[in-house]
Length: 281
Figure 1 (cartoon, rainbow, N blue to C red):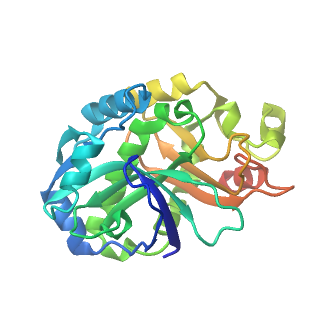
Figure 2: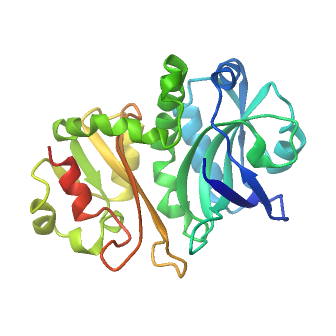
């Protein structure tokens, strides 16, 4: 796996550390399924993330029992091997030419280790660049929670899916997107693909440019006809490097498409024309 520099974790760890994130083991997945999951809330009392993650978990977290805890409680409890945690972690890739800090939504098992990144990592999903507003991802939290649970169930049923770049496995589902309605926000698209006329040059199936509230409602209602785009990028920030793109089912968290690219003159901050070509099947 790629090396990470961990800069902060739930606003507690102030000292940077280096870590090698190892592939999860099948026995870790089994232990997770038997555990109670502690959902870590942010220290910032004005954070809307706390409200949104609480609502999302209460509606859609089904895979284990759960309890909400503070960041301080997490630091006290994270070495208990019989506990699992759903936690927002900030980290960066140490081999990037540009080194932004990213938010990841992570499910990890407790372990008596010094560094948080040495905790068994069951599933981590890119959420945002560190300095991007919470509004860029809060509305997608429930959809990401659905995906995390789907992924964990999948690797539990077939341990061969546990491998580097495991999310690429789901690209086999991309041909099914045409049977759904793809919902995207304008800001999730590359500037060259933001008009419907530009989209239609590369994608002939059903698509809607919608608001974040529309996507949040589709996930809350578990709309089986909708898939939505989860894009992680700098959103105009100074440090610009990676862009993640995931297309997720609003009803069940099924992943239909996964890809990444680095920002360049020809590849902007968003879903690209080449991405539309890949799913235009």
